[in-house]
Amino acid sequence: MTNVQIYPDAGALMRAAAELFITIADEATAARGRFSVALSGGSTPRALYKLLALDGFARQVDWSKVNVFWGDERAVPPDHEWSNYRMAREALLDHVPIPEVRIYRIPGELSPTLAADVYQRMLKEFFGEANPPRFDLVLLGMGGDGHIASLFPDVPLLHETGRWVAAAKTPAGISPDVARITFTPVVLNAAANVVFLVQGPDKAARLKAVLEGPHKPDELPAQVVKPVDGRLVWLVDKAAHPPVYGAVGA
Ligand code: 6PG
Image (tube, rainbow, N blue to C red; front, side, top):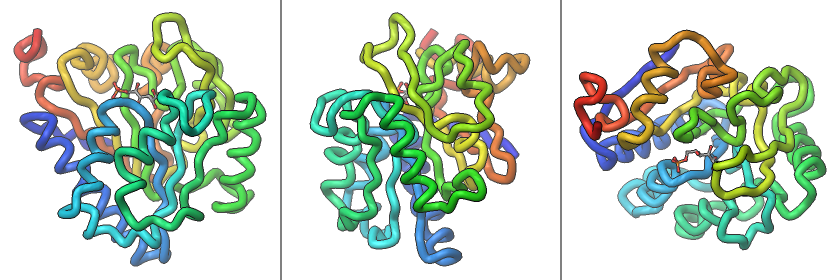
């Protein structure tokens, strides 16, 4: 089931995202006693993390039950300015009472291939080995080229059916220019909820192609996300999804 929700501006989009995060966390905690979430990098997800850190939202979450993972990481140490872990720590995790043992970062300081193996092992320990992990929530941004996590256009990883986590190269022109470690579509599509956050006019043409154009996942990696037994929600603002294409921010 795909659900596209369009908000008047980035602020409204982020508030809706924070509320959805809280609802999914609540439901998961009530059903299973824990909530597992995979965070994304990027400026749009960062705005959500900052909002969730504010008291009005933060106090609605039982942080003792939250287990935080990352859908992708840059191959840098955790204190590096490019680190997705560092970003989420500074925007959110340092401001909420989450137990340290429930923060599962990707070891970006290792070689990307080793880091991917180590992280896959961590996922197996947490979720079990038998089936791909069923995250309660995977948060994703979408790059201007349609990439998600660190799955870029035209890479074989878009068709991966075995590995859960893999090393990835960053194509020319994408910043920062550093190797990555990323979930594969196997994990994204096993989630209970995948929530995309897309904001701003720069994403409008690509978003329209992803949502309304022909299925071309090699060109448009966001199209590989089709949870097998889960919910897919797009939270977007009007600038990214204008009523008449070209009318806003053109
Ligand atoms: C990363 C991300 C990446 C990001 C998108 C959207 O590590 O760079 O995980 O997939 O989410 O590029 O980023 P923006 O919101 O900054 O456009």
